[in-house]
Amino acid sequence: MIHSPSRIEVSLDDDPRLLAALRTLVLHSARRAGLRPSAQEDFASAALDACRDTFPLIPAAAGAGGRLRVVLQDYHDRVEMTIEHSGEPLPTAGLDTFCAQAGRESESKLSGALQVKKVDRVQYETRDGVSRVILIKYSGARPLESSSTA
Image 1 (tube, rainbow, N blue to C red):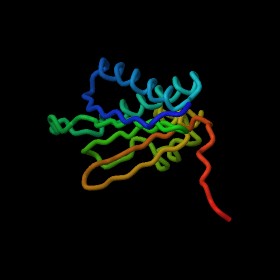
Image 2 (image 1 turned 135 degrees about the horizontal axis):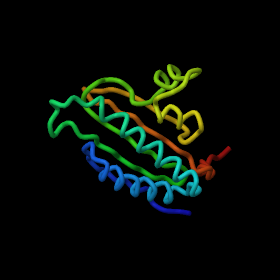
Image 3 (image 1 turned 45 degrees about the vertical axis):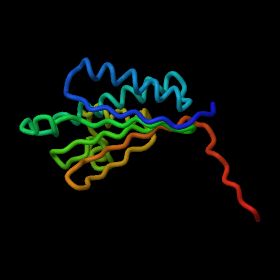
Image 4 (image 1 turned 180 degrees about the vertical axis):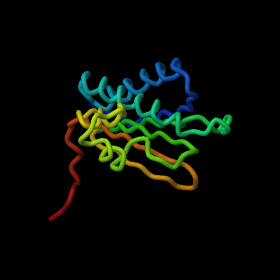
């Protein structure tokens, strides 16, 4: 499947109806990236869990700034979902939250999702008061070969 990468940006309030719509967008991007149907469902599940886990980190006083900014990007070999928010500078999911849950019963759905390989990579950063979590799932397609002259 050869296509140009696409990018979808949305702002979300903590509303189950909006999360249902986001699920459709995540599935669309995962399909475009070439993920198998079961991997598409797994990635969508992990993505929605990550959003649900992030909403409590946004202070109620944030008003209109209390939304999540979600960016979905699909490439020929992977799909990426970035979740950005202002508020608590804590990772929704990442090495520290993943490792903290290891070895005991986890209440975090996303950490559980990571443990069963629903996503392949999680990146986390905070810059200029914005926390960012990036979920990445690879399709298994071979990356483009780089051309070199030896």
